[in-house]
Length: 170
Image 1 (cartoon, rainbow, N blue to C red):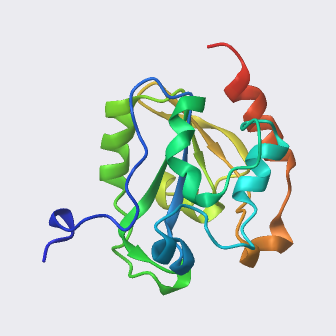
Image 2: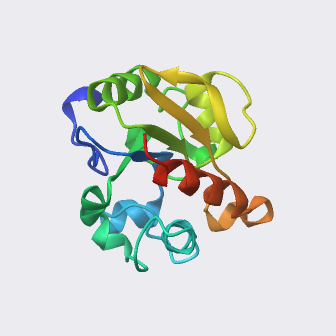
Image 3: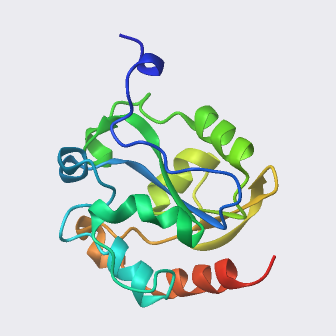
């Protein structure tokens, strides 16, 4: 079956008017099993959102559908594959489809939740922080991965900088 015809492992949480969309590489196995973004208990995503005050309280992964009310959306580069980045096939990332989704919904900011996601989307290594490229009018930002497997690279600082940009008036 063609990937375009299959249901995504996790649905996009996108709509016009969002301030911020987070983009990961692919759903992890726990997220796929629970049908919720960033569901592994070792993942710091939800704790980081709350720590930098992007959410008013600590949300559980299953509550991800509540994020658009806060101006936040979610997507992945690989909608039809799951697992760790090193387990994904070479053609798992659909950058063209991501660009189309972002151009259509036009959030103010798109934040890649890892350097791997940013590298796949941008075609180059990218430092943490705001990037020079844009997708349409959407500004791009690179974050340290919240995955428990990337704990050695964890730094809340870029997440705080992102929150400052997201909370600033357009």
